[in-house]
Image 1 (cartoon, rainbow, N blue to C red):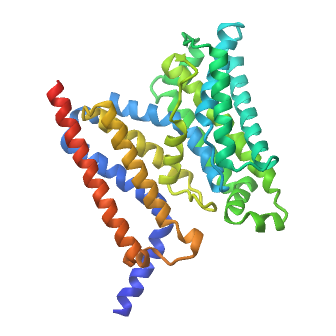
Image 2 (cartoon, rainbow, N blue to C red; image 1 turned 180 degrees about the horizontal axis):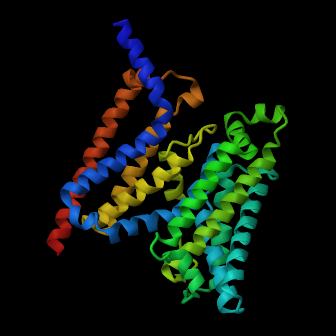
Image 3 (cartoon, rainbow, N blue to C red; image 1 turned 45 degrees about the vertical axis):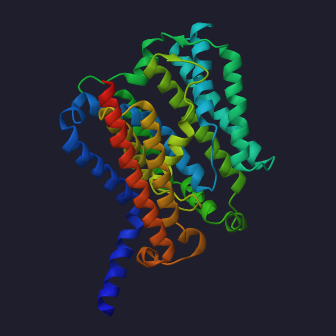
Length: 370
């Protein structure tokens, strides 16, 4: 019996560091298996898989940057507004002031970095909590976008902009996917090979201890928010190119989608643990899930319900699994035997059952409407 227990502990000790990857990968496999049974022809078409990659690529740069922000125990709720305002500013530079696209695009990304810098200064200099500070700046940036755009929908941009959003390298993969994977690769390198990455994890683990060892905590927090602003602006440019249009109300749910993808991918809400590969898996998972709901002909409102339930369930599960980062509890096997774990398992079963019921009901209503 003791040998079995020791073996269990050894196996779980080996598996636990990879839970951040295993979790979303299992969910992705479940989606693939389910869609392979229900809608194999439509879901696994090359054109549909390309749509999934294009949707995921839009969130990859932001997920990479948000990984650094959350790892430092921060949060950024302004990324949707930064994306919209950056896209609006780029559009006006091109449409109103005849800037070449190859100049307007870098200016838009630089302005996004400037907005990230403002967020960082509000948090570190004015000592406003991340949640309140970025939420307030979200209102500011969205308001500026509304004032500048004046209700207009700006459309029809040069080829460079549309190529960034939906172009394809001949004989290769879509350009947005290349951009997204490149930013993910750059983030992985920065996290694992640079002082910035090591300091990010150190600050998230213990800001006080990091400061005592000589790490400029506030400065590195500002770096993370500048990176976040630049990546949000890049996403705004990609969105503009994808739709070949932009308006002030664009990208309203970027913050929820990106934060959910990062946390589902294993980055700890309590700081100190990061996974760029996990964030990539989280982005792919959410894009595949939404596409599956569309493929199943679930009405849009039911899609919103299902997406919200899955996101909340996933984030709650990962937050619970990462409690040891906060309170020092023991490994996963011990957690699963606890009373709290049993309650969570029952709640998760109820949520999954309710989700399946909603999907069946939504599919039935959609069939009757058709």
